[in-house]
Image (cartoon, rainbow, N blue to C red; front, top):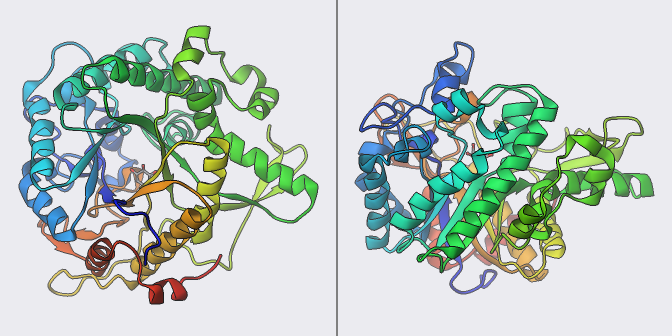
Amino acid sequence: MGTFPNNFIWGAATAAYQIEGGSRIDGRGACIWDDFCDGPDNCVGATGEVACDHYHRLEEDIELMKQLGLKAYRLSASWSRVLPDGRGPVNQAGLDFYDRLVDGLKDAGIEPLVTAYHWDLPSTLQKELGGWAHADLPQIFADYASVLFDRLGDRVAYWLTINEPWCIVDGGYFHGIHAPGISDVPLGYRVGHNLLRGHAYAAARYRASINGTGQISLAINGGSRRPASDEVADVEAAERAMQNFAGWFADPAHYGDYPAVMRQRLGDLLPDFSTEDRLLLTGSMDYLALNYYTSDVIQSAPGNGAMELEVVAQPKLEHTEMDWPIVPQGLRRFLCWMSKRYPSLPVYVTENGAAMADVPDEAGYVDDQDRIAYLRDHLAAASDAVADGVDLRGYFAWTLMDNLEWSLGFSKRFGLIRCDFGTLKRTIKASGHWYANVIRAGGLEPTEIETGVVQ
Ligand code: FCB
């Protein structure tokens, strides 16, 4: 033990659309994920109408968090629950829900971390303005975020503006597999640009607000990009891949512009930031919020795309149910790369976890030793990063309970707690009990670290 600093924040994360349900009640407006999942071929038939019914089970779910001994809980607010049309009058019933949730967490001694936007754009903004592609969206988003800061900011000290802009662009605008289901690369870069501007405007509004004494950032998803060989061309390609991935959003949010390699290779696809936007972006992350699931191996591939590289498959590694290779030491490399490129920022892992083929017994209990191994090996890698000098202050497991995994519906389970989607019964899995022990002990037992694999 002793591998994590004192006062380390042990948490779990969720997102509104994935767990809340209650999508048509108490004044909530529709969001783009409601629309997307209504499409016959999307979300494998699932919708967010009930999901885990967290909207009606808030007390029960906080009780479960207490049983896990969580020190912190990362939630997101549903924009269209708070502002049904994305702007205009506030839906008090919706805002009250988050007020009760935050109060309940505080009463339970659990620190809330609130994400303002985890992908669920109000439908009206998509239909009337074309969503994030519209140049006014950043300001409209900052207005919405300010409603949250004003109402919850006296009790919430940790904020995230936007979750994983990379995924929003890649899934929603490059490949059309996430809402709003568009495949248009130039548009995607414009959307990414406006997401960054939205983050910067909201962060500035937070800092200027009366409640703005806490920390604000945006969640960046990433992983390591290891070169396939020691050849200079592969090493350079792997570094390009990192900058084009995590650097795409972290560089502007820290330094005020995209990485030079992106500017050189993407040319007109990347819009320019105004001088004012650059100023607002620079230093707009109070901490690094990093989501990690897997890592890639990269080799140079002259002529292949703007970055001239390709991903090398890793067939020998174990894969999760998402078909993502399990690479614990990639987390260590990712944390080290980020800390080096954006020095002097405290670091939090704001998501990490695995979808596994859970098999419940008759009582609904899941003995998920594979998920325990995943979490154990990633925590061991995170503690290696601490030993390397990374200022890691917290870790949030993805996710508190099985939920609606976006386009994959209810088919992938990531939870520490099983949710039976028929009865909505919650049952803490073996991994949940294991995580509770880790939290109690303040880290892994030495014996567990020795069993960790090195990859
Ligand atoms: C992340 C998302 C999160 C969840 C996990 C598995 O990209 O932020 O909502 O879907 O992946």
